[in-house]
Length: 432
Image (tube, rainbow, N blue to C red; front, top):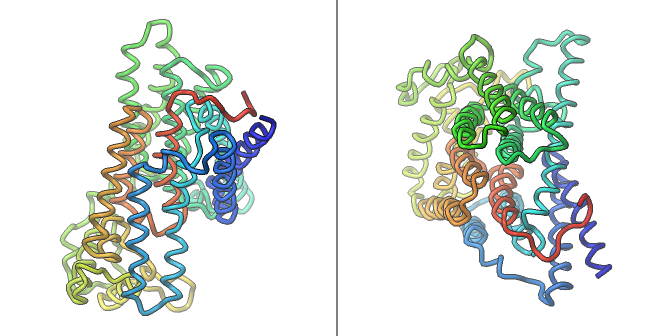
């Protein structure tokens, strides 16, 4: 029993390290902490059940992720660069390791997740506060432009990806809203209310159109849910919900850097993507660029006769060639700026079919279907919201092309799926 309690403490510490590494973009720490959680979870499972493995490993999402990884491994047969292919497979290994880490143990339940989420919320709050303080220093003492308060510039101290961090914050915001709906607060109602407002402000500053839109929809949805609660619980709930929704609407309906990003969506000429040649000075908004990527992917697969096999790790060089041939901006040669060179498809559906052909696309769609299946089976509000956001995010980003993209896509669904089950016989002991 003492050994089991010792492992509980270690797991608790490893999870905190993992949350810090996700928020601060410490890639090495993320890999190490995942490995430690996996090893400790397996050992704990062996001690308490007599077996290294458990039935959770039959999880459909985990199995679909393994299938996708195996499909990537077959790309070795169609690549001319084994070094690049090996690097790509090493990156993709997170698709197996992260789900395996969450499925291998029997300790994760609603009680454990509640204790871990408290740390998750405070870690994100501290990281964003540090970024804001750095931005203030740059603005007032180094006379930087106000761009330092927005988007990728805001999280540059950690070399973090603004959209991915905003998804981390959104997961925390949904947790806070769900707890407020049940009148269960972090410390007290005032701190809980302030955290809701703070997280909302941070999401706005990070300027992800997708996450801001989802945040507004969530506030409206929770307002409707709040109408069903008892009158004596409504005041603090309505106050936080209306404050969050009002902040979002105020930003979107006034002239500022954030609302300008939304206006770019419908301000551009969508026929631009059909041109064969461009002036390097042409700017593509997000939608125009993704339409152009769809055309390039179709052309590459047709030219290479690779609809069934994909082009594996030649994907990026072939895309770069398309950018050069189309006379898109590729830098001026005088600075490190390489323009569009190195840009992937920014759409995981397109990326899957480009790298692995139609089989890759079908397996990725299978992964998305298993996510929907998990959410439908659990019927948990947080899991459903996060699942919808992650699938929507895949239309906006090549999620599996970065370590943290893979991590957030594979971590949150299973963490919520197992973290909303009834209390197990053994739980992590610290912070009870």
